[in-house]
Structures are given as C-alpha cells and as structure tokens.
Amino acid sequence: MLGSAVARSTQPLCVFFLTMKRCLAIAIALVAVVIFAANCGVLSGPRMGDVTESFETSNHTFKLRVERHAEVGGFMAVLNGAYYVFRAASVGSDNWHDIMTFRHDDPNPIPRDQVRFVNERVGFVFMGWLYAASTDGGATWTVWNAKRDLPNRQCCSYQTIANVELNADGSGTMTLSPIEERPGEVPQLHTNDFGRHWSV
Image (cartoon, rainbow, N blue to C red; front, top):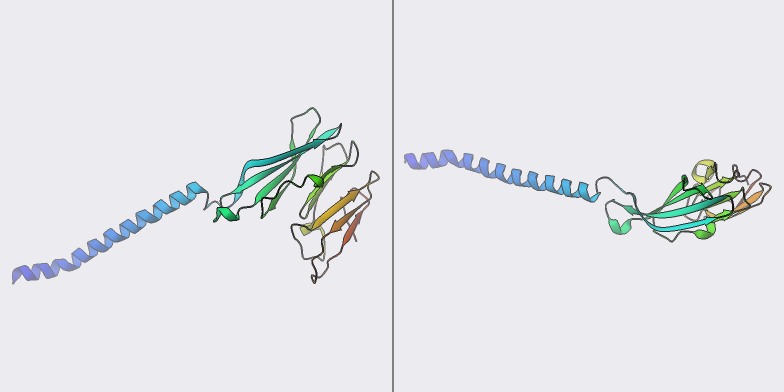
C-alpha cells in the first residue's frame, strides 16, 4: 500500500524530468542548427563572394575593369545571382578605384560591350539601370541611377538601359527598354553634359 502511494507521488516528478530532458535535447539541436547556418552564411544574407570573371580594357590614358563576383549566402544558393564591380585606373597604375557596383539576379557573363571609350579623356559604362561617365581620364566619375534620377517612371528592369551613344562634345542618346503598359515609359533620353543629366 505504502509502495504504491510512493510510486504515485513520484510519477509526476518522473514526467517532469522526462519533459525537461526532451526540451534540453530540442534546445541543443536548435543551437546546433543556428551555429551551422551562421557558418554557412545563411543568416547573414546574400553578399559578394569571389571573382568568377574579369574583363579589362584601356585606351592610352586610363583603363577600365569589370569583375563579376559570385553571390554567396542567402537562403537558397541555387538562386544566387552576381555582383558586377566596375573600376578605373590610370594606365601604368594599379591604383584601382570603384565606379559602381550592380547586382543581378542571374550570374550572366560580363557585358563587355557596355564598357566604352569616346576618346582619351571620356569613357562610360552602363548596366541595368546604372550609367557612369568620366570626362577627366577616369579620375572622377558621375553615376546616374534610373531608380533615383528618372522621375515619373516605375523603375526598373535588368535591361532598363539598352544602349548608350555618347559624343566627344557631351551630347548623347540613351536607348531604354520600355515595359509595355507601364506608365511613364519612354524609349529614349538625351544628354548634353556627358550623361550627368538625361531628359526626354
């Protein structure tokens, strides 16, 4: 009789310890998952990884380089895109400085035809909705961003800027890829100051 009473009184205690043991095991498993995910870069989000492709071109005054970096981290690696870093340096120098960085959802090849020189002092690059130009041999650059600088337009697609033609006097035409049925779309923009400003 006494034995069965003791057994009944200790039963809740045994259930409590079993529950605590299970909770501890689950907590340890969760901590392990968090540590693993952090080491894999999942929790830190997508970021720029190693260079997977590089392209360089020059005239007699300055040179331009584009590096495609793998995107690493994020939730699903198969969905990672790429970062395209545009840089400039004087001929004979290894002192590269960044012009602009563009992120694309897909790791496409570097768009080599979008890196151009007008003459020894003027050059420009473009990709997606970004355009940059230099008029002083690559020392300084002006970056134009359609998301920021193109009013009354729902921007943007990865093919926003289809082409740019720039002349030595600063005049030029930017051909856009309009999205049908989207308000504010225009097929072309024009500049008279090497692309610092564009207008319809």
